[in-house]
Amino acid sequence: MKLDQLATITDATVRQIRFLIAEGFVPSPDGGRTYASYDDKHVRAIRRFQRLKALGFPNAAIRILLDAREGVPIPVVEGVTLIVASELIGCDLDVGPIVERAGARLREALGKVRPKATKKRGAG
Image: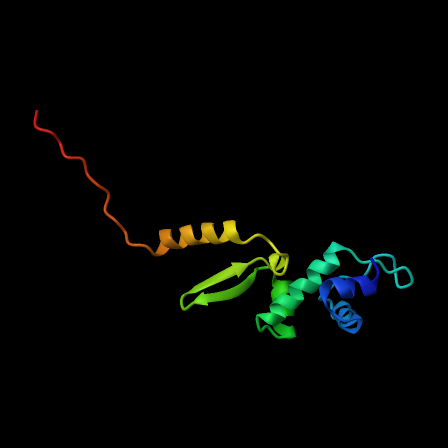
């Protein structure tokens, strides 16, 4: 796709996209300057940046998070922080199954410890 199509799909301006490419937040286009072509990797990179900005991260922090490859910390409540792989940010996943699994793991980790039931020996 061409730059103007990428701008439409991502709801970003051409100027913003050029800035993101120049700053290394988005990969350079395929095909060089004259025949520049963009694809899903560019869409994902722009959406990832937009999502991190919406979460309140400044550009410098976004650069560190993306370079570190350790994941993006997202506070949930005091004492609980999700760590999300940076490549998943803004990729429009179905979060339903993830939420279910995360909820189960949290219940497992934070729930009461219940003693195991012991079998009574019958009189024989």
